[in-house]
Length: 180
Image 1: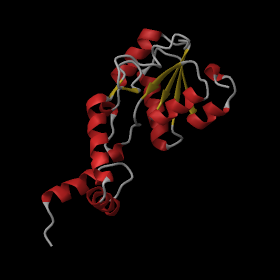
Image 2: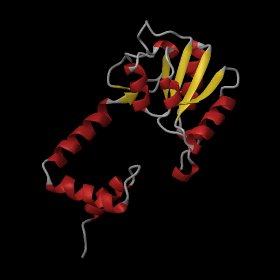
Image 3: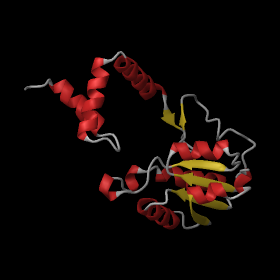
């Protein structure tokens, strides 16, 4: 059976998402094509692509000119928490962490084709230079890739006092950066 090239392109696009294989990508493509939700998904994706971008300072996604996290004057400059994913930054904010944040949007992973040039390291270096934190907490996932990324960042941020710690261990500690 010959399927349209557009269908194959849609399956391929879903297949390129992390954690989605070819069979799941096919199911997602069929769902998008056979449900009214497909139009809603396309509109939401298009709107997000046009209006959302990473903050130049912390890399948290914003849709306005200013970042509410970076512009929060109550946040101290003593600590900078570097996390792998946006969800981790949200958890820190929800827990009351009052230091500065930076989101890498991933970790080094040769298998996934993620090297230093795919991470916003220049922005991280600029952030550290501009706020001059006493401590940079490297709160990356407790995985081999997270550990390798943290070690790389320790060398990358040579002039900064960096502490490697798993994200889960960091949030379990009381009163770090104001977290309760």
